[in-house]
Amino acid sequence: MVQFFSESPRLDRHLPRLAEHVRLLEKLGFDGVMFGEHVNQPSTLFLSSRLPLLAALAMVTERIKLGTMLAILPLYHPVHFARDAAVVDHITHGRLVLGVGLGYQKKDFDAFGIPFAERTARFEEGLEILRRAWTETTFSYYGRHFQVENAGISPPPYQHPHPPIIVAAGSKEGVKRAARSGDGVVLDSWQNLDTVKQYSKLYRELADKRGRRPSITLNRNILLAESREQALGEHGAGILQMARYSWGHGYGAADFRAWTKQGRTPESLTVEDVVEERMLCGSPAEVVDQIAMWLEVTGADAINLRFPWTGEDLTRLTRTWELFAEKVKPHFG
Image (tube, rainbow, N blue to C red; front, side, top):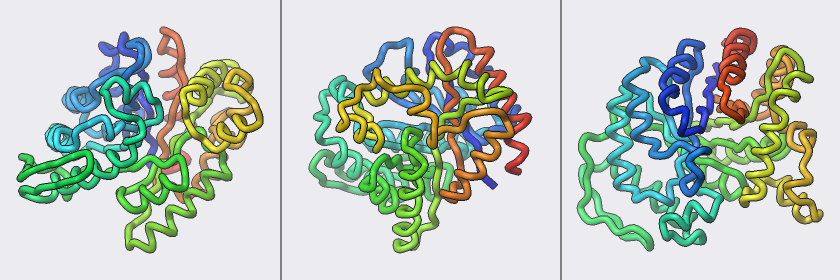
């Protein structure tokens, strides 16, 4: 049975209402709510301090999983991250899910004085340290970027051996990294169907060779309304804004790279460019068929749904959640 997660609204000014919305997602039967991360951003765009936020939300929810999608692991000292995550795992009684990624915006790294070119090495060292911190009483580690002497954390995580680590992959190298180092892979929302199909196949092959149980999460933008025309009318502008921002700030989706070589710019994008063969879009019946197709092609275990939203009024967003819960989710158990 596929699990459905929702990405949370991102606006700091709605923080007092955030608990209300997470409780609504729990009531509607969503399996989890996930929080993205950018650091060096205007406060009007992204919430900050993910793990403390998840701890607070755990106190007002009972069932729903709470997680990061994604935490930019190279920006953290992994021992600090391991300690905080272990405590949050206890506060949530094992409902914590950790999606982690390299990050793609240089300005996030500039805020910490971390060279952008070091992100991959820091990520891989960080993953190793996380696992050792959670599974060994004490350990030492001597890497290029992190040196740890006789470290230990207490308490160990609530989940055994630790919360699931879902590794983001936006390239073949990322897929290989996820199969090698993660408990699962998350395939990003801007890649088209053919690319996601290739990546999921590669990931399964590599996970099987390593004796790992493959676990695939799809990140998918969803434009949902009573009709396709209404969905595009209500959400098209928001999703186009998100796509232009991602491409313009260095996101490396295969199509973005190809369009750059063709001389196109983010401003040239149209709604059709970013919706076709990459997003869930249309009426509930159409979205049901699209989800079934994506599941068949990828064999995914979970889908993290990114409901586009811009502006101050959250009513449209909550209506979309309710429409999904009423007319889409029941088709998938």
